Amino acid sequence: MKTKKKTDPKKLKIRRRSIKPEPMYEPYRMAGEMSDDKILEDSFKDLIAEKGGTRGDWEDKFEAIAYHETGKTMDPAQKQVGGGPGRGLYQFEYLKDPSKLDRSAAATAVNRAVERFNDQGRQIPEWLFKLHQEPADFSRLSKEKQQILLIADKLQGPGDFGDVLSSSKDFSEWWRKYHHKKDKGPKAKKFKKDTEEYLKFRYSTPRI
Image (tube, rainbow, N blue to C red; front, side, top):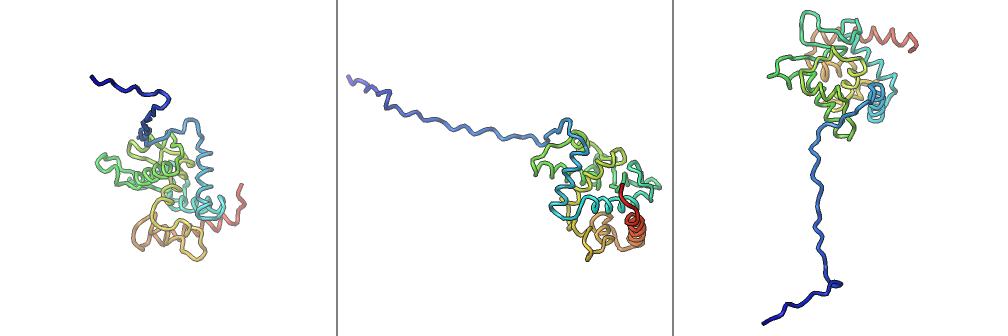
């Protein structure tokens, strides 16, 4: 009868199984009490780091866009005159039909904002999480929230957002290609006239 050879405990090698952590399937990181002002401040810092300029430079251009898009009311709750789908300061299109949810400009902006926050590993504010789950009506959002979305949309989207501040580029041409997204019709000429009017007034008036 063969006897089983005893193993010396001191020479026993223990094979430890490497356990890899389960991947985190958590697409949204909730920001809790983070204020819109802080999120917007961080958004401007990112924008300036990537495209240059100052916060004042960018705010002037954002306000010029809003001046035209809102029909000069500058009202964050502005709805498109005549019952069209445009909403808010920048008139991002709102489509209530759930079957067309992903086709609206507003939904695209929200998706790009979520994508940007995730790419950067930043916390996603609760209001953006909720907006991602329903038809996005920007006329219900504050000016700060709309600016956060505009910055994310244009940095994540096509075209060079830096052209907005470039002295060698046509601001109205950037707007036509990457915001209005229509032909070179009378609306593009109206935008050029409105923004030049606003910026002339803005540059003659000190920012408070």
